[in-house]
Image (tube, rainbow, N blue to C red; front, side, top):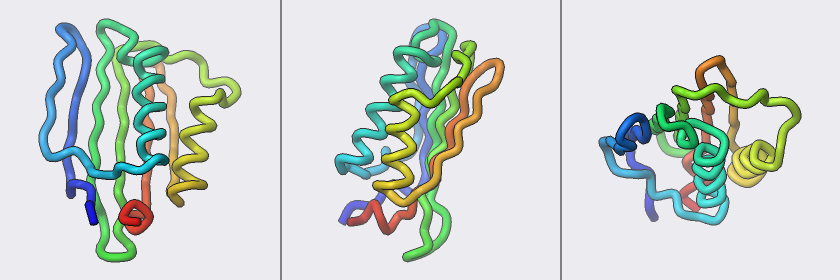
Length: 130
């Protein structure tokens, strides 16, 4: 049984396109979690912070709670770019919501601001251990 790292963070982008981080990456390899990571990174590279030379992406994760009540909290923050108007949910946002809510039993909140995007994902750890 693999469990995500208890906490960690990573940052990508900005001038020089460097990557910084601490902690071990979560070990949540399954089709739904791989789909989720692929979609978030693809969108950041095509439309978000990683498409802008000054953009940055910060990713943080931590576990709250114990045993069956433990929640993996993922915080995805893109900054240094002007996001497109969210408008109607496109394929990517629908996919993220479907994976997080329907397949993994979690919640997702997306907020657009004048200088970036913040996504908060909470997943029941018990669903990831299966």
